[in-house]
Length: 395
Ligand SMILES: *Cc1c(COP(=O)(O)O)cnc(C)c1O
Image (cartoon, rainbow, N blue to C red):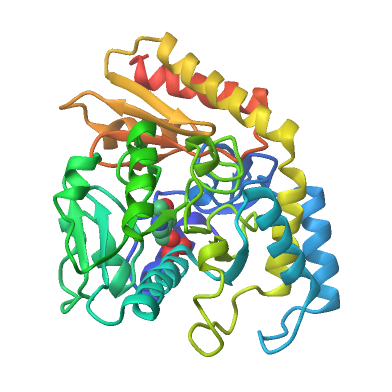
């Protein structure tokens, strides 16, 4: 099939909900992807932070192949080894106490919203169900997580949304406390707002928020769908903020390309969701869980150090160009935002980058976002950086 034939087929038979790039991906190796004609692209996107081990990683392929031959599905009415082993790994390496597996980030966030409301209901009864979230946040596309998302553009068309969310206008204690009230049960945050523009929260604010939530018995919910699973140079980003959330979510990178997500709860919250109160047909699928175990095995301490070094290298290199269109470069680990100056035509720059066969993402109104596979090599980074240099410096 040629690219034009594929594009026509897609347009004829699929709901056109995506503004796709003009690229059809066929296969990948390491952190390089190939289109239908076999042309290579350096991947600074990993899908959207999903392909944490790049493509055709031997340990990942082996784990998926072995588990798919053994048992591909079991339902959650039965015990399976990959499920329990994955939960153990995640708990031991995060300091959290118990896991629940889901299939996507929005769905996992629904899980912590339910957990927070039930925690409060069990203890205080009805009327304490409001969750404070932050302006600029992104928590998903379900009716409830759209409303949890603190960006007005998401609050359209699909009325009525789920009630019980208020937005802190500024990411600080004054902003959060302005939304306080007798109806509050939790505060939900991303430590680095990904879709919002790669915006890291201030460490002092996050620690003060954790203390304040503890003093009020509000649950602190951390959405690590994008920041989790090694992306920021530690298994979870909260480990670098010096806090332990009451519950957190993860998704994108967990299974290295297979659909999987989940919830972790701390000791206080591990028993809130009881039999019959939360469930999923697919969540914790054995093949996805086996893939996730291969991802976690690969993400050892040496790998975390490399993620930090590589992220620093990307940021230092882009900064060193002093490109006239760039306002600032920020991020943590391999989650990097190149913030463009006001008035710069981002979509023109991004298509020029794609023309040079490098895949990047955008975030917020004026940021180019890089989320490369965590295993990206120096050579692949340099190939991608050369294209970025040419475009950002107008060569
Ligand atoms: C991507 C993302 C989501 C939504 O995840 P889906 O798997 O698309 O449902 C939620 N929260 C954050 C922070 C995300 O980056």
